[in-house]
Image (cartoon, rainbow, N blue to C red; front, side, top):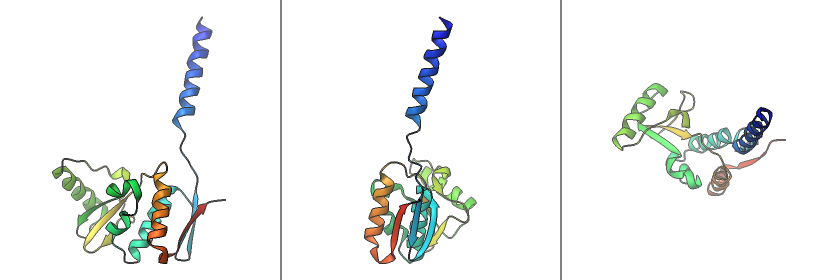
Amino acid sequence: MAEYQVRVTEKKRKEREARSDTRDWTSYDVSLGGSKLSGLRKRHAIYQTFRHLVEQGITPEKVSEQCGPRANRAVVSVDGEVNAEDFYRLAKEARAKEGRSFDPTRYFCGDKELLHFGGRTYAFLNQWGGSDWKQAMVNLREAFSDKEIEFTPSE
């Protein structure tokens, strides 16, 4: 009887493992205006695309509008050109006033990741699972076709 219970428990564990990790770990090569970045995870590929477009003078809001189903939460911004520590504090305070929370682990908000534009500081979403990523990348490529955005799975 004990041996049977061990087998059932082991079988359930294996089934749970098989169900729990169905994530797509494909890496991508991204070309942005002729500059190529290789072997990027999806979250880094879209972040670099977002960064490239903002550095080309497109407002972060206009870029994030093209991010498909996640457009409404693709960026968080605060007034002023601030560092990561101040960004976290200001974003947390601003969200609290709206009755919402701010989780910095869900955004690119390190000192070297934050973007400054028009007197504001922006953090870009790093949660890009499922089909939302591809839809956002296709939207960005099409909306800003003059910015030479290409992406392909890494070899």
